[in-house]
Length: 106
Image (cartoon, rainbow, N blue to C red; front, side):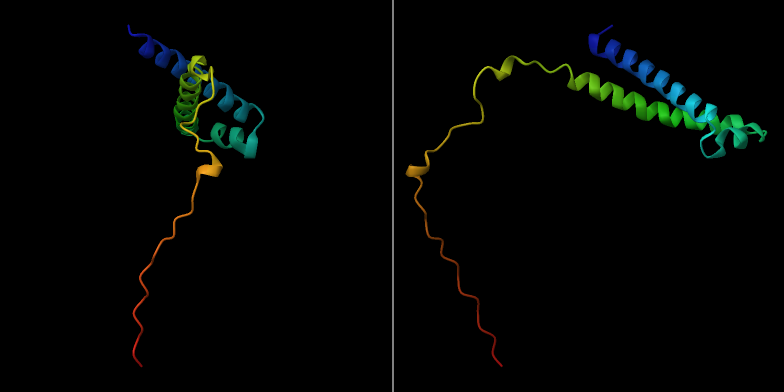
């Protein structure tokens, strides 16, 4: 299996594990009465499932993005970068001519 696919699957699993902890925390501390709401409803498990899946997608995406951004090499930071610098004493202002707008007749 390619390394990128393996990293993606690992980070998605980490993201969904974080989402499970987050949803469990929401239910445990009864944030906004969520535990009472889902425990007294016959279809409350659907709400918990939707909360878990939607948070899992968000957490997995963020986890994978952070993992990819942390893969960057620091080898390119050896010297100064940013292109060619122009010395300020070599710069000469150039006048720009703009056409005069037509006058309206009254």
